Length: 591
Image (cartoon, rainbow, N blue to C red; front, side, top):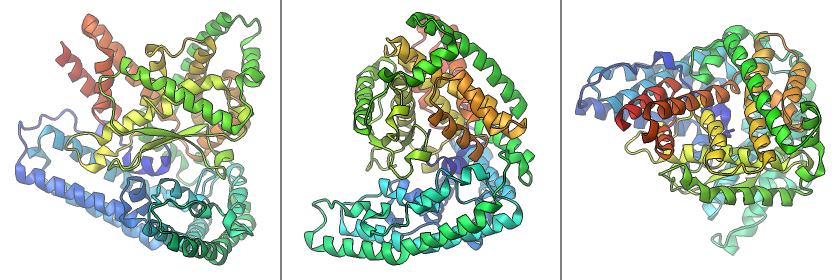
């Protein structure tokens, strides 16, 4: 799972049926029009960074590291108007005289804007706090901020000092959401008070915001350190803690009692339309929720049959349910401490790295590292996630792993998980996109969920081509992860369009997967909190696998797996039908 899911999804997923992929562009682009398009993209990229300083930070642009987004209702309305104006500006550029590459950029940005404008109807900003993040976990951005100079620390102090305004804006949005009947499920929001309470500390030095001040690098002058630390403690004591006390009181006393008992997004205003929209939005297809549900049921049955074969290979004599229980509970599948778990993840990453040349000609230049998920969010966070590196290469990518409750983190899942989240999964996908020649920045950083997560799930199966699944329990881990994504198709659509309860969804997941209950509950709650997003993984993987099978069939002895994998990544993140047209052209060229 790519971290900052909501931000990435908001700016990048595009319904594919509306792209102009079948057009025949001129051989060369009109130079003046192409330059006008480039200038438009540059201006819109700059607008995005200015209006979302957090996004600038994640992309490695340090100019706005001293501020947050303005999330007032007035600022949101202004941004929505700017999106509508931007679409008019884009339509003033004559698409018909552009070359193929420019047309793809034009069409992609057009539909990003059109999607953002269509989403305005649903007012998702009225639910600014989720159990997976919000103003209560604002300290997390420090993970990707530089702390190499006094100025860097001053930037962080400025952000810290502005927390009260961020809290005020979040409360105002929640109040508006209550008025509009747009509130999240209570079962998720019951997790949030503990997260807020973690920010209300008696000792400022124990605040999550204080972490950067516990150890200064040598590049920060000794004379500045004491003053910086003292200012941080004052800011935490006088501004941050009081702000979070206010949030805690409002959330517990007023907001939480008004959240809804239902879990289905269809219970919200315009909910049925919203969920149907999200299904197409995340998968970049025109599939309806009912069709996706049926695909999931068939995939679950197929993978169960494969699991039965691997179970027999291990010599286990019981039922598949008993085998799942064995995988969840036998001590030999677990390590005892968070430190040992982190070391194990890093060892797996080192094992994968030298095998990558078996399945790729092109290895991205950007490095990656393995880090623990911060303690204050780990209990409510999934098993792992990936954080992309900075666009300018100044910060590597990071594979974050969850060390909370090591007794719930089986070692048989580590290979597929690492293949997905690190290499050759998300790290290759994001790092290769940053290396696209001549592409505008919005294309180099784009994130279509079906493409990105479909690639991550496809990458798990590349472990077979890399010779990594030599143990049957590791193969069961791969099947468990494949099943995990198939189950998603069933339970997400089940809960949001077919009336399933949370308990039924958890039971279905547990019946068909050996994943531990800790993970299963967190996953189900994630699907409740971000409806439709989880549908993209399996749909994307199935398309990439289908295209590989087509290439193998049509090219025969000419098929080169390394070249195919490179070709999939060479487009950057795109809708699935655009990827299919690209691979069909690649197959024709290989002949």
